[in-house]
Length: 118
Length: 118
DNA sequence: ATAGTCACTATCCTAAAGGTAATTAATAGC
DNA sequence: GCTATTAATTACCTTTAGGATAGTGACTAT
Image (cartoon, rainbow over the protein chains, first blue to last red):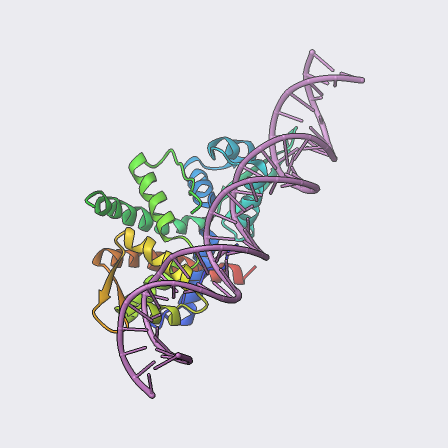
C-alpha cells in the first residue's frame, strides 16, 4: 500500500497518525464495497462476497479480507460444512466506519451539486 | 486514478455515486496533505507547498493542484509579481472536507487503541 | 553574459495495485 | 473414475501512481 503523506501544523502528532492510519486502512478499490455489503447484508460467505462485489477476483477478495481481518474490522469463521464454507462478518469496531462513510456521502452530495453548476 | 467500486443494497444510487466521487476525489498520497496545509496556513504559493509537502516533486504537486482546482476545492491565482508567483487557496466548499477529516481522525484514534491491544 | 528565481513541463523509470487464468485440497454425488 | 463445490493460492501480466532528473520560459540581479 502506498503510504499516505499528511502533515499539518494545526494537528497534533497523534491525530496526524490516526488520520494517516484511517486513510491507509480504508483506501483501495474494494474496501468500502466489502464493508458496506457486510454491513447491510450481515454475515456472508466467500462465495456471496464474490457475487455482490461485482468484478472482484478470488485473489483480490482473499487479500482484502485478510487485511480487514488483520485490522480487526471483520471476523473470519470456518464453518463445519462440506465443502468447507467460511463466514465473514463485520466487528462492532467496524461499525464506527459508518461515521466516515456518512461524512464522505454528505461531502460527495454537496460536491456533485457544486460540480453540476460548472 | 483507480476507479473505486462500491455497491450496497442499503444505499440509493445517488448516495452510492456521491460516496464513490468523494473517495476518488480525496484519495491519493498527497491530497489531504495539501488540503490540510492550505486550510491551516492559508493561501500559499507553489514554492511554499513544495516545502510544506515534504518529499513531493513539482510534477506531482502540479498534477494534484490541477485536480483539486478542477474539482473546485482550491483556487489558483497568478500574481502580478516578478518573477511570476501563483497563489493557491482552498474554497469555502473545500472546508466541508473537514467533516470527513474529523471522522477519519476519530476512527483512526479508536482504531489505534483497538490494534494496540492485539 | 551569466546566474538565479519561480512555476511549471517532459521523459524516463520503478513499485505497487490489481487482473487473468490455472491449480489445489477436501469432500460429495453420480 | 469423473465431475462439482468452496475457498482459496500461485504464477504471470498489465496498468497506474508516483519518483528522479532535467529542461523551459519569463523575468531580475550582478
